[in-house]
Every structure is written in structure tokens, then in C-alpha cells.
Length: 362
Image (cartoon, rainbow, N blue to C red; front, side, top):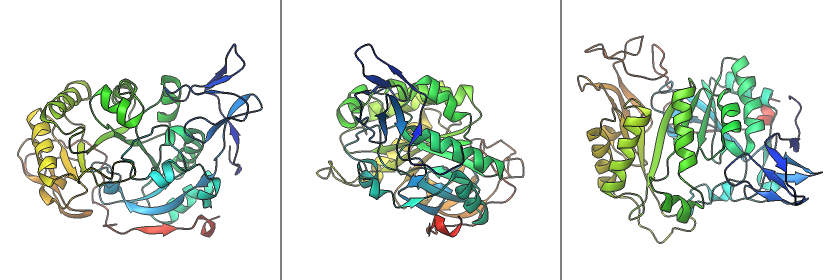
């Protein structure tokens, strides 16, 4: 599929005996009458089938540092062309992109581009990768897959920034086309997922295990720590033990600071001490690469060798300083391997943010 279109067919749905059709893209299994939209707002019933209504449309394009996704072990220092669409299949009360993820307005999608145009723009702008972010590529997977294929043909990687809330068949379909993912592990309790996100934890854990065990996609995790909601020692201990044992100690974990937004404006911002505590718990449970984010914390943002403790990649916000990786990703001091996707030299994009008009590349 290469032509720009706003409405395209999907394949993950089936008809029900009562005349409705059920969308099978995610565990919500929205059951739709003709003309109805799913909870995500962008997958809808049209002519007795489920279609994607926002193919080729975006809420905007921007070149960011890859560390902003956040990915610290995937082409560090490189530029990534980021974009999202509208809608979301979760309903997180703390959403910090709520103007995009909860938008029902088509005119909120201000830019448009074919997959080939996006791939060409990424290449010409010197981006190592394209990221599906701001909202979740699960709900626009047909567009994301086509973009990923167009990028791969030009040597540009594709990154999913996702909540991982999807079912098995589309999961396998989507991740065949991707190169890296940062999955938002929002908490480690079913109660939090149910009460705060209107979702469930189990499918997310299944996605994590699938990515790690069944694909070659580079995986990192992010947890936004909300005071009094998902930041207890007990929950952080259980989460990091699970990651170390089920995914492996080499999977990087990012603990990021919450700022009051959308329906959680009554909550206070996350103290830096909470992020440091989470990082300490993770390291104590065997996680080799634990990071803090959304705060100024050079130590918490840098990468250290898990064997000798020396700084491998120094970071101050999104600016890189030290670089002590050999060409094969090993520590310059002790030769221990640092897992990730690296080049001989780091990128030099820094902390710049560059809005992009796709019309300039059409």
C-alpha cells in the first residue's frame, strides 16, 4: 500500500452472531454497530467491516534525540523522526499527550504523508530511525507497518513507543517490521491498570515476553512513577524482579518523573529521590541498566559497565559526553559486552528539537 488514503481496511476483526463486528486489534475487543468507532476513535465499522480512518494523517512530525523516546542503547546520540496520529486504546488518567491521544477531531491531524515520503524525509534529515510515538502505533498499525517497510528499504530503522496493549496475531504482524521498542510498563498491578488506565496488565506482560523471546527487536522499558500510585518499594521490587527473571537483566529500565496533567492535576510531581530509589531497587534486583528520566540527573542518565562500573556513555539530559564503547559494543576498560545497537561513534544530534513539514519532502 503506497497511495495516501484516510480510510483503509483492516484484517483483525470478525463478525458476531448479533450483527455487530468485533475489533480484535487489542484486548478491548470493541463490538461495533455500523458507523460506530472503537474506544481508540480511529478504528471504526464501515460497510460491515472494521477500517482505519486516519491512514496517512499525523498530529505532526519532529526530529528528536533518540534518548527522548527514551532509548539509551539504540544508536545513542542519533536523530529520530517522530510522529503520531490521534486516539489511543488506553484511557490513562495521567496522560501527558492527552490532547493527541484523546482527540476525536480529524482536523487535529494537521499533517499528512505517504510512507515513502516519511522514509525519504528521515533519510534526507539524517535520522537513523523513525518513531511511532505521542499516541500508540497499535491503533494505526497498518500505517505504521507501511512506514516501517518504506524506511527499511532506505536503511532507516523503525521504533515503536507503545503501551504494548494488543493481542497476539497483530502483535506478531507488527513486530516483524520493527527494529526497536520502548514499552510503557505503567505499573505492576492489575488494580492500577484497571482503575487508572481502564486496561489490564497481563496482555502487556505477554507483549514484553513476546518481543524479548520471539523477535530481534531491541527492547527498553519505561515506568512513569506517580506518587502514591505505583511507586511503593513493594511494587518496584516485584516489577524489577519480574523483568530481571522473565526478560533478562540486560533490558534497560527507565524510571521517569510524573508531572500533574489531564485528570491527575491533584497529584504532586515525582521527587527526584523516588526515581533514585527505584533505580537502586532495580540495580539491587540485577537490572544492569536502570535510568532516571524527566529530571536533571547525570548519574541516573548515564550508562555504566555492569562488570567494572566505569562510565560507558555519559549523558546530561540528551547531551552525550563520555563514550567508552569499543566498535563491537564492549567496555573500553574491561571488554564486557554492553547490549544494544551501537555504531563505532555516537551520534551528535544533542538535545535539538526540529519540527518538520512533510510537504517539503513530498
